[in-house]
Image 1 (cartoon, rainbow, N blue to C red):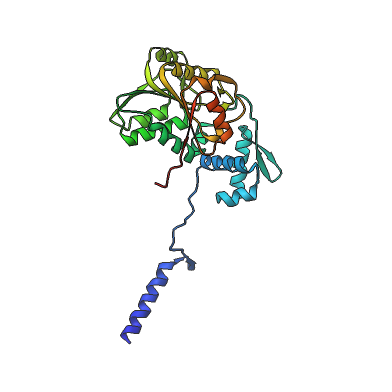
Image 2: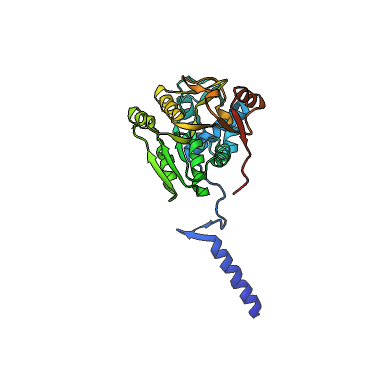
Length: 299
């Protein structure tokens, strides 16, 4: 009898853990936490762009299923991406805009969330090109920021110069890095310093290495969306003994508004395995080393 009573009390306690009584109404409560992790808008929108880049066109239903988001959330994301020039809408879905305007510039928040695994792999390989005691220029680029992060993790002792606010904050996390921020004007809604103060500062710098990000790799040239941004990159290239461009597979395509420099003007381009062999061969025909970063394993 005692055993049966204990058993009944145990069952009663289990039921109480699952049931909440509110205003006389019993509501069953789940004991398991939700496995769904809500993405921020920039993460969802970057995911949409990657899905569209792979598939060309998708429906709202497909995006809702893949992202675990409601139809209304997906519609808002598609409206935003259409307004900003990333995609074109069609009935019930969207298609990637294959040739955006020459001055089209992705938002920094979305750019940072796009091709993150590829950028991380590129950053890891690029960081191996740096030795203790060297001076390094870091361009404003989410891929270059990945290089900086891996250098901090490796504990490499360097003197760093950058025109990127996020990269600057990343570099200051290491006590072994002396960080110098170039002057200039911050781009509206961005994190990049451009303009004459920074250009004049770079004219007096003689660094060992410069890591440069580009908007597009187009045939035999690197291009950008604005003259001011291109001018800063040109000064960085001129200020370094060795120049390494870091660009994931999505950066290969039609030229943007203005030329930064010929591919032949840099020493190495580091990309990822998503870049086609024909693209790699074209880079190497220009006399520039093209290195492919292997994907990183799970951390």
